[in-house]
Amino acid sequence: IRRPPRSTPKPSSAASDVYKRQLHAKCVAIAEELQQYPADIIIYSIDAVKKKAKFFPSFAEFAEVCEPMVHPRRSLLNKLHKCIALYQ
Image 1 (spheres, rainbow, N blue to C red):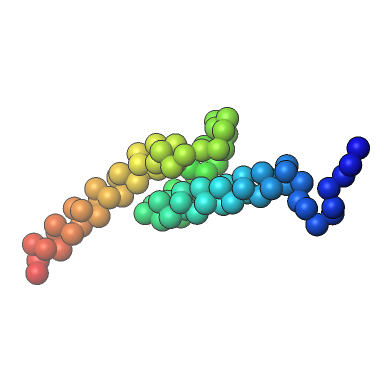
Image 2 (image 1 turned 180 degrees about the vertical axis):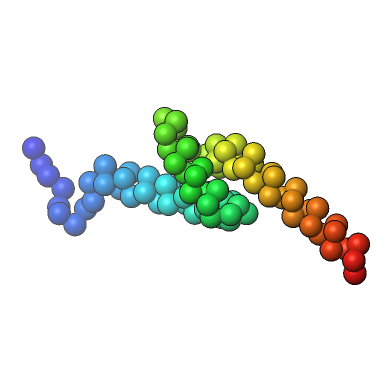
């Protein structure tokens, strides 16, 4: 059996590098989307999604956990802005 020279990467190594780059890109994309939520909600959603996800989670899975938690805060903030506007 003839072996390739050591300087030639193994095909599996090249595939692994591609996978790692894709995984990094997915993480960056999800992190950018999650920036719209408060840190405590993000931390909670990561734990919640981690417990039920069988595959690499999508942003939608995080949003499914985050949205119900952030809704009351957004509602309160909107009411506060309306109240401030009344007295200006």
